[in-house]
Image 1 (tube, rainbow, N blue to C red):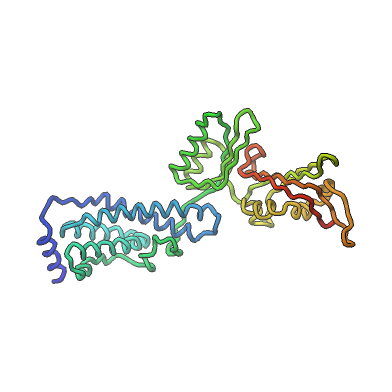
Image 2: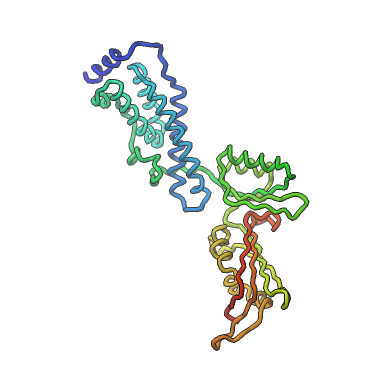
Length: 337
C-alpha cells in the first residue's frame, strides 16, 4: 500500500512527460563505478611505492567521475516510471556478481535519497528496495580516501622503463608524455642525459599492463620486476693529491627481495654508498684511500669523496638511466680490513 501511495504521489507532484531515463547510460555508469571501486580497493591495499599503489589516485578519480555521472542521472529522475526503470537496472546489474551487488548498494542509497526529495516524504525511501543488492561492508565508504580492502579484484599493472632520444623540438618526448597522461600512467622517475648529439630521456613508470605492453612494443624498453641495477662512481682526492676514480656495478640478487627497487638504491646506496661498497667490495674501495690509525683503530681514509649514482633497467646503461644522483661526501673514514 505504501509503495502504491508513493507512486501516486510521484504522478501527482510531477507532470507526465516523455520517458527520459537513459538506461544505457545508467548501465554504462554502473559498470564504470564498479570498475573504479574494485581498482581503488585493490590498489589501496598494496604496499606503498608499488605500481598498484601508485595507480590508486587514478583509479579513485575514475570512480569519482563515475559516481558523479550516476548522481546526475539519479538526480534527473522525477516520475514513477523512471524510478521503476532505475530499480530494474539496479536489480539486473546486482545479480551479475558480488562486486556489482556491492556497487548497487551504493547507488541504491542515492535512489532512496532522490525518492525522499521528490516526494518531500522521508518514508518514500523505504519504497526503493533492490532485493538482489548486497552489502559486503560499509558500502557508503567505498570511495573515501581512507577505504580499506573490501573487495580484491586484481587489475593487472606493470612497471617499466622506456628510453628514447629526441631533437630540441621534443616531438617524440611530448608524444610519449601525452600517452602517459591519456592512459593514466604514473611517472615514478625520469632522467635526461644531454651528453650525446641528441638528448636521451629515461622514464621509469607504471600503468595498466596492456598499455605498458603496447608502449614497449612501440618504443622498446624493459619491464621492471624489482630488478633495477646501478652504477656507482666514487671519486676521491683533489687538485694537489690527484684524483682517483673507480666504478662499481650493483645488481639485485635472489637473497634480497627489495635490492632491485628504486627506493632501495635511494635509501641504502645514495644515503651511504661507502658503507655498502666497503661491505661488498672493500679491495676495490681501498684503492681510493690510505690506511690511517685513529684512536688505536685502523681506518681507510677517503679524502674529498664524491659519489655519482645511475639507476637503470636490467638492460639499460648510464646514458638511459632513470635516476641519477651526485653526493659530495667529504672526508670519510671506513673500518679497515
